[in-house]
Amino acid sequence: MINKNKVWKYLAYAIGEIFLVVIGIYIAIQFNNWNEGKRNQRLIQTNIGILIENLQKDSISMAKSIEIITERIASNELIKKRLNQESANLDTLVKIVRFEFSPKIHGVTFANDDAYQAMNQLGEINLMEKHLRQDVFGLYSRHDELLAFYRPKLEKYIETLMDFHSKYGLQETSTFKEGPIAEAKWKKATMNDLAQAFDPLMLTKMSLYNLGLPRIERIYVETQEVLNKLRKAQNDQFLPQD
Image (cartoon, rainbow, N blue to C red; front, side):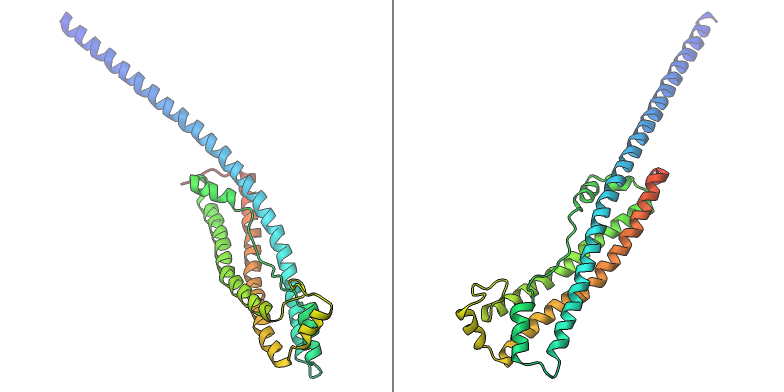
């Protein structure tokens, strides 16, 4: 009986020790999870703040691009209208090509995508609430789509520009901007040849602007929507839900 009591006491003691160890491990895990949750929450808030700052910069840049491209489209339409008037002649064409047409093209860049790319590579973006994460991912995907849209069209424009420059030069890029040599060069231009050379250059530039502007405007609107959601998340201190 004495030996049996000792065995039961030992078993009860051992079970108690195991129970205490399990409880201790459980508490440690819960405490670690709590700390991890707090760290993730701080990281989410930091990243949201960075995204807001970067998208605000992108928004300002896009608004400026929309303004500039809208002005360029209007300018190109005015040139087109003048060239299609009944009174238009070789002098009209030479004046526009030589002194008024600018070979510069206003492209769109997103100079503030690096932080998002880093968050994505590190997996930090996955800590955000699911719908917010999808909205952010979708917006930055639209950045890549716009750049992919512009790339071949810019290459085509540069190719067309170089072809024209090799034949006539342009005021901004030509070695002979004024003086006898420049005058002699332009005096050799004929209406048909100059028109055939200038037409694809003008059309390529107008196409790039006319097709690109609606895309930039859509991304600008989407940026405002995502910014509003990020600001709300920042204020509400969203935590990951999945």
